[in-house]
Amino acid sequence: MTVGRRGFRWGWRLLLLALLVLAGVQLWFFAHIAYWKFQNPGPTAFMDHELARLRAKDPKATLRQQWTPYERISNNLKRAVIAAEDARFNEHEGVDWQAVEKAYEENMRRGRPVKGGSTISQQLAKNLFLSPERSYLRKAQELIITGMLEFAWDKRRILEVYLNVAEWGDGVFGAEAAARHYYGVSAAQVDAEQAARLAAFLPSPKRYGRLRSGPFLDRRTEHILRYMPVTQVP
Image (tube, rainbow, N blue to C red; front, top):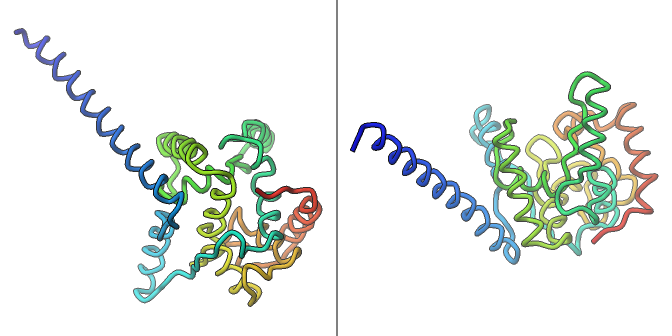
């Protein structure tokens, strides 16, 4: 056998091995998603990353997060988050291509990235499994996981898990911890204005959670309040 043919065969073997490894990784993701359809997930990849960041400054740092069932989260907060983050949440199948197109046009108009167009399902996929770093490879994996979530879970479960793992401030995760941290109430007791304000934090929770108020946050809160009454929850 010539050197060229041996190299060709080894190339195919390495490609097959890479495909098997990739398939195994995707199966690992899907197995977790299937299990979490009925069991609540523990700390997410994003939580682990944030805890490591906080403990680099303070070894005793902890995260604030408490799981709260869907029915014990205020409908005000559900509507506010959908209105703020993903207006077509109940209609799309994981990716809102209209939002992606609008974000692209806005970014081109501004000459810099100001909008992302990610859906709640995409944000959940990233939070559960992936790092905050940005790359085309990570984005591709995010889309694959998003498809798995939409296939395995209904919209109610996607929203329930998202509301329990979303970052709402420095070390603050989930609706229950956010409601208690900012307003001293449970997630079930959040009123419409409080919900709109919490949803307004989500694009940059560490920054806006510290500010809590200001011209941009006030305008965004008013915008969310205006759309909440016509927003449907699953």
